[in-house]
Image 1 (cartoon, rainbow, N blue to C red):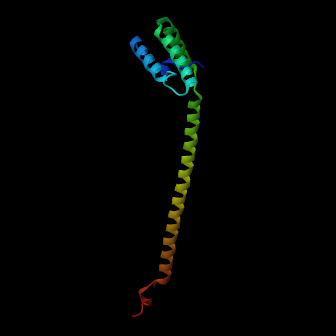
Image 2 (cartoon, one colour; image 1 turned 180 degrees about the vertical axis):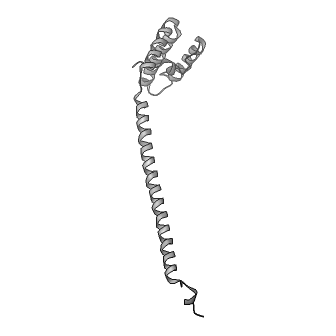
Image 3 (cartoon, rainbow, N blue to C red; image 1 turned 90 degrees about the vertical axis):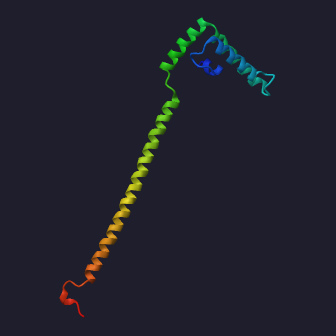
Length: 137
């Protein structure tokens, strides 16, 4: 899969020639093999930066690359987007099931409290006299 030259140079898709040139110089200065310890990595990044600059600095090549990039972005479905959707669905399912369990526990706790109150009321009714005749002074 071809790389996004705009991201390699760190410029916007609507960047002009001056912005592309200054970004190219900054990237080359930053990734130059003489300033980096890892020279093989620096050489690879310099080649990528040079290819990006060579393509984006030439107007004809840039038009062809932009058309290709638009076509690729329109037809390409990223797997990370699918992974995100799967993650979101599974997260929602887990959250809903946890809420159902918590609500169920809350309901069962409320039922237990209500049952206790009913039992206490029944005990009070059994122990309280029903008529005024039963009360002895």
